[in-house]
Amino acid sequence: MVSTLIILFASGFCLLLVWVILHSGLPPIRSLGDWEANKHEVDIDAFRLLLESAEEQYLRRSLPPLEFRVFQRRRLKLALRSLDLVGKNALMLMKLGQLAKAGANPKLAQEAEELIYGALRLRVNLLLVQPYLGLKWLFPGWTVSVPGFALPYEELLSYLNRVREQRRWDLERILMAG
Amino acid sequence: MLESILLMERSARMLQVCLLIVLILLMSRLGLTWQHYALGIAAGFGIYSALDLALLQFRAHLHSVAYATFALLGSAAYNLAVITWAVYFLKPRDEKSVDSLPSTDLANWNDALTEQVDKWYQR
Image 1: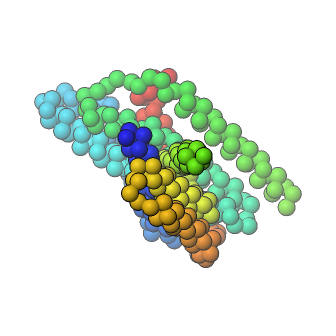
Image 2: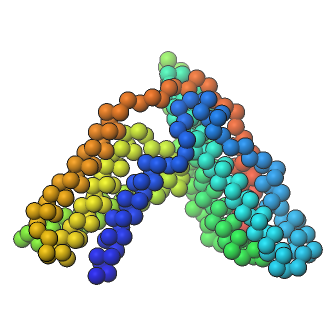
Image 3: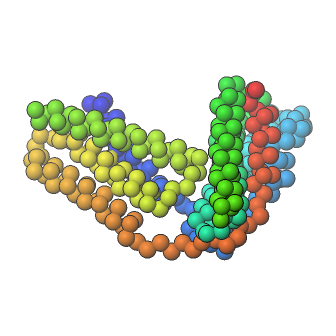
């Protein structure tokens, strides 16, 4: 009975994921105009302010604990919303980069490679920041650092760098040859 | 004999479903963009293996339903996958190539997020 439930859950989950990838919820990006029309404007200074430690300390000192938790949750929710929009922007830019890479212009392909690298790095950073902010939202008074994530993160970033360098050399070779 | 074949098929489908789940989750979380055809192929396999796995499981438990019905449903699942592949390969792609790229603030956002990662996660 348990194995039946596990198997049915796995098959249902697989179908759900297929549905999710086919309907990503992102607008289709087919040109630069599509990006301009669909991009989300997010203020980076406002985001920094929302996560400013000094601000948090000030609020903690000046507000009663219950009010501080409510207020802090609102700030974190706004920060998470900003990150959600920035993540969507990164996905659209990746798509745009892929389209530019498919063109015949090698110089543009190199720029597209940089754009895709930047967007991918942002998505990796989001993988770390979003769960932490989620935890902070659950426990607004929490100030402890999270151990154990440093090594895979550094390794992943250096791997991304190596891939970028390799692709840059390949493109430069094509430019020299052509 | 038939039981061992069904068991092997069920194991293979389970493995296929798990691999597809891992693949789709990793691609989605990292935001790696699917190539048009790769997306269609993965979606077709996902639909087929998930439906077939469920059918094999029901077949082992629902003895009142005729085997012929399960055989027909299995074929229908495969046909659904074939239709998915056909749609993806036959549908004309209306993507134009891009002539220029926009200026973005990705670097600033990456700096801001790296600051937060450095602050929160112990090195």
